Length: 488
Figure 1 (cartoon, rainbow, N blue to C red):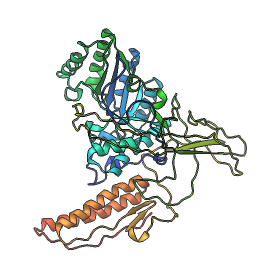
Figure 2 (spheres, rainbow, N blue to C red; figure 1 turned 120 degrees about the vertical axis):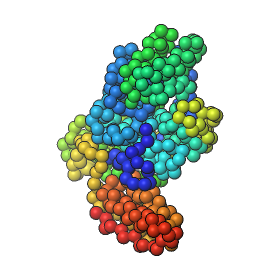
Figure 3 (cartoon, rainbow, N blue to C red; figure 1 turned 90 degrees about the vertical axis):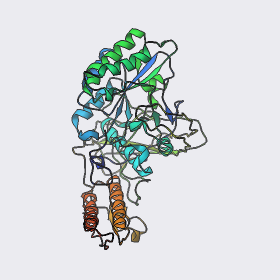
Figure 4 (spheres, rainbow, N blue to C red; figure 1 turned 60 degrees about the horizontal axis):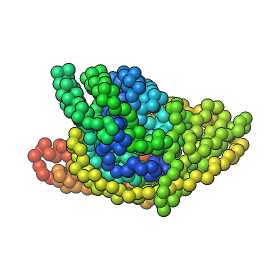
């Protein structure tokens, strides 16, 4: 389930950056009653939330049709680029089935960009895994989810804090089919038994369940799922989404998101540059936003709009995203908010339920003034073009570089590479190289440029030097000054 290569030790598929700008600037108020922490069971008696991880895959479309034939709803925890399947927003089969899920009333949730173990990552790494998937889903639907499930069910205290700050409900489960360990025709009966052993003795008048399976396995999609649905039907249970089984209104399941060309990031050092306005049209049937909560923490929101010389701009209310079909007008409304969080540790097993369930007390509120309309003398095109590849090549920035400039050994747009440590032995050489790979990965979060790939060539050259020292059988290793490429 993990990326095709190890992060920090080369260029991985996980390094791919979706087009269209970051979503970090989107307001993330905590609304509703579902905890922005770990939860593992449903609260509405008679409801069973069927959840499917790791897709979409080649069997997912047929599974959606099967669910629809039973008038059942499910929640799909989406990964962005794992298993070498290609990015979801630039692979038409994946983008189409995600739109179909949404149009047919299923819930879409996050399972990270590349199925990385969030408990092992830095704060920047965790945010990168979440933000990249947000960007891709924004490119497909015009919004991204507020529910997530950590890969391997691994989300330690630091991870919980990050997810809370990003405004996510952390979903575990209390009914594990263990289908991924039983994914052969000979073994799938074990997964069926696991489900039946929980459902059959239960009482739908008092009980509810949150079940986990994986739509990337053929035995799950074409065998197990129908058994689950028939069993629930016979017992009088209702197959619903996670949001439904938690009593959470659908408008709380997602956050509206437009493109964000200018932002303040905790992952990269920002620069001062002009803010431009573009529009993001949505192909979904819903336009979700989050707009209320109770707290003393306040946030501000602003809206702007531009029009062409031949049309009047359309504006949005606080409860809908903008969707424009004209080529002459666009509206972009962005809210910013602050959140605070405290957290406790959680489970690290991929199948076990969390050992403890703790509560985070985090509240915030947003205020959204009515959008205003302004007219400019120069027309602005508002028709976004769908992404055609997993990477884009931005123009070289002329903005003021990160300060102080002297601390940057190499600059790519808004990303600043710190000088690599010097060394005089193999151990120091390897440590310096590891830093090169690690900070090189963050380059892709700041800007999608071939210069990021060129920088990783520096890391590769230094790694080869360290290896040659090691193979010579010596503990010493003479320092070689890195030769940085010229930015494109």
